[in-house]
Amino acid sequence: MPRANRRRRDDPPDVSRLGGTTSTTSYAGGLWTVRRLSGAGSTHPYRCPGCQQEIAPGIPHVVVWPADGVGGVGDRRHWHTGCWLRRDARPAGNAYR
Ligand SMILES: [Zn+2]
Image 1 (cartoon, rainbow, N blue to C red):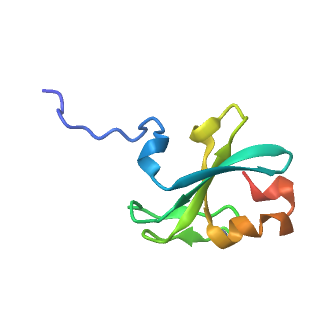
Image 2: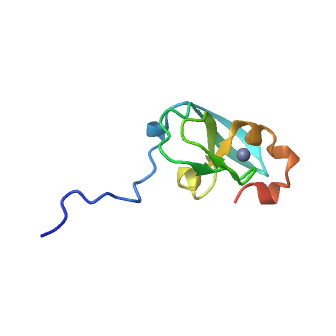
């Protein structure tokens, strides 16, 4: 008998579900979509690529993805707001991966 309510671990990205407000900025030679999140919808921690520390659930932060890249929103990363604002202080090639 098949399991009726198996959870999908790879739900397709749905930007509208993230909430918050979106802007576009340039970084590392590309255009990036930046969405500010209240964190209220967070249910699990994310790894910030700026400082390699976890962003705890419920903490306001930003989510960033290539505005003109192939990966699009599927290649998004969650950053601490402060780490994103200080991204230019980091080597561009290493800050985003
Ligand atoms: Zn950080």
